[in-house]
Length: 216
Length: 288
Image (cartoon, rainbow over all chains, first blue to last red; front, side, top):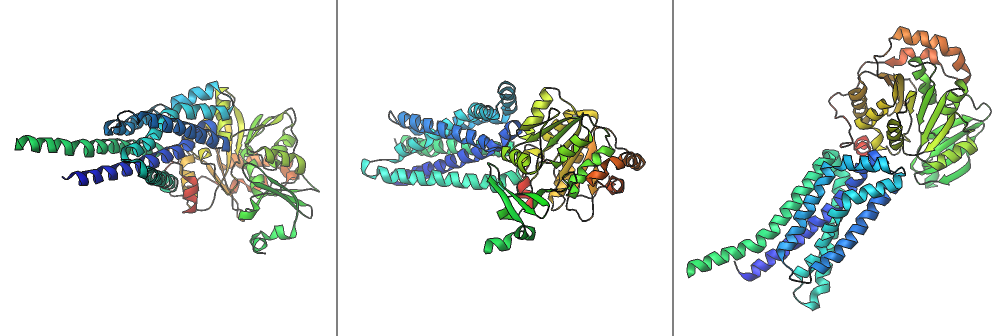
């Protein structure tokens, strides 16, 4: 495989998984309202809590993802974001009931109850999902002059992913599946995205090394 | 002009006496002769939410409001009553008038509705009748934690335009069941049209087993009446109706006609999925 072709494949993979990251963020956010409503209602402040927590987590994720990209940016770390985010979503399936029940018992006011529950459930996975965008840009940028163009492309695909994640989840997924089934789907897709990043970055290099070994 | 053409006819002749936009909806109070009505979301064509005759405020104007008292045939003389959804307050006011010693809790999500009920619909709290501004699901969960129990629960939290999906699930109905006394009755004002009827029926059946399906000709409403014990037979309903009918006369509740309309036969598609906290796309289902 020529290096150019390989580069193209890597860029395409990064843009695709950034799309998936954006999709996952909004799909999880939308399900957040459904998950919290049995304990805190579905009032406007429940949505306020969820959106606040997602915005806060994303901002922290952007900052720390950018910082991580300074020293030795590499695809392995990048794929790690997807896998770690997927793992951090597991508690939303496995322990949400218990966590919300505890919050419900301790906090009387459903505004702060929903805020606290959102923090407990969504803060960590969303921070990690937020790291994807700045790190993607660092991996895609090869010289300063086109960095704005690359950033634009990246925002485009990840925000399109978010738009589609919102639409698909609210129009169709909740009609076809149970909430936890959708979450399992998101976890599986994030895992696959992480593995795909590793595969396109390391397998061609390994193959190349083997070919070279044979030639020697 | 376009807007006017979309308005319900009654509104064109009626005078708008109050308008308020709340967090949840637009509230309009209109008056047409002696009839004053509360309407939610006029612009998208909602019908009257509740009405009162200002010359005779005790009379219940709507058939579904009157039907909400059919639960008295199953549980007469309730001492502890919970009403979810205040509207104009006519259901709790009637209870308070009928049973002055009963403890009546009302849960309403929208403070603006509470204010309008007080200002325009003769609603007033008293020491036995209190309103809590809260989501009904949260209220019921808290009540269960505090071991509160009720004899008579009315679920009337559906405005027609948007269905609160977390108030239709098996888990919610189980929570409601946990705050019912052994012989308590549950009266739910529900949807009678569209395929949503099937989903709702299947869900109630899943939690309560048998229920009375109470419908009147000329009324779009279907009231579900049930309890934790086996339901009384028609003879018991009729004798309960005879005992109480004279007390209900002044509200215009034709209770003697009700037993014949309360049916336990299944007229819905039993193959529908039960609505749960995991699966409750109520608003999507209704439109399909």
